[in-house]
Image (cartoon, rainbow, N blue to C red; front, side, top):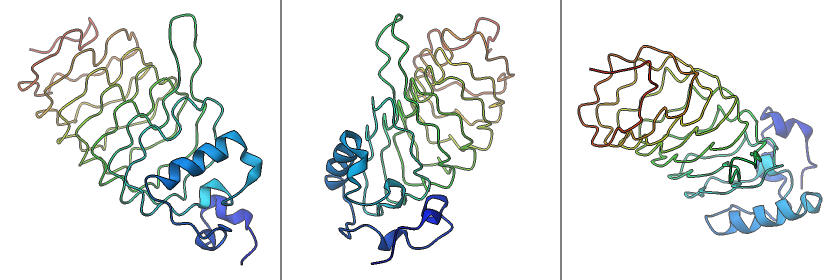
Length: 229
């Protein structure tokens, strides 16, 4: 058994697959059990550093760290190439106007292969996540519902995203502080744009070229200073 290498955390080393003492390749069920153990007692280290877990067979990562407010460990080495849903993965537990508790997860996950993911709804809702993910291949994503809702201060570019398959953008930036240039997004297949930019005074980009002809619901979609003809 190779000793745990600190290099594993930066993905420089290739030892990650060798240092889990149990030799576990996680699936949709065992990953949740392992995370429950880790969140309750990180010092237990049952499977080694969480960044080095073999997640190559996991397809469902929905709500894996939902409401785990204090979790902020590196996950950049995770193999997400088979994942199809990341719904609510890092969402925080903000419940009402008097409770501003959010997820503190804020690690670089730009290297993740998300090309098979179809659901990213609520993924960063009520979180402090603020790392670039512009290089992600989101071409398979169908739902981005409330993906960045109240995700402050997320401010990175998303201009390179291919969102042409997305049908649900309900509340994607609701109550967010986002003001990135997303003018080139192909939203022609979006059916639900309800509250997409609702209750935000920060977004001030030109999206007049958007084709929203298929949007069946778009109430409170755009800030008051943005009216699409």
